[in-house]
Length: 365
Image 1 (cartoon, rainbow, N blue to C red):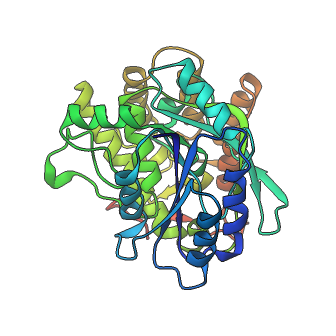
Image 2: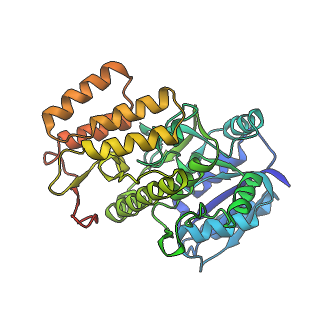
């Protein structure tokens, strides 16, 4: 049994696959197994991965061409894992050499941790740095932000395998990508997410059930290029992300015996806000949201900051939002995701991005 089993899904990923595999081989922590999960590649990716496997017995290649979406593919990978920690690695990203060592140290320092993520740089197809991964890094940051956007960068994450198994045994529902494993909703209302935001559904649920953190260190290079799902299927991805936020809110309400809030006015998936038709003042919804976060998140700076930022978004006229944002910025060091969220709303109609408009039914137009 290796300390880390690395799940690397690939489908026609020849352009960057070698660099991704090389970054695992170059780790300063050597007790790992790399499982390349092929999803029906036709571009030579399998042959390339198999050539690596011939040279390094720690690398294995497993084809799952019929797996249902990325969730199904990753679940096939989870079934193969026999390790302490499951590490995610995408076929177009680059792990920095100390990544495994840093994650292992974090897990060993706190036996309660189920998920450990990190920060990183965003790079383009040529490897040039074009941005930064912006994730919460405080002890309660992940749970505080789980309702509003994915709180963990998926390819930067590692998970404690025996903890996942214990959580699944407790609920009677195995911890799987794409499935509701909290299990408090009636079966007919449990969401299924085969792709597009399966990572958010996984980490959002785990944040409600167990300790999860992001290390305040850059351990990965996340590649952004024209073929990313966030670029090619943006509208559909935003709808799925909103469905997940609402499903999490409903589960929280049942778990804690409180009135359900609608997180839609306060979500910033993709660092953008939803334009909710006919509404610009969400003060009443904010009151329910505040009750929810006070029940969910322990008192401290992460909860205070999250409530302060979501209050900025509660009134959408430009002047009011600008004034509230200015006050927020005077009290807190503004994060890139917060700045981009507010700018995208204040400059809506002046940018090329289409407005994400919700109809009265709650669906994206």
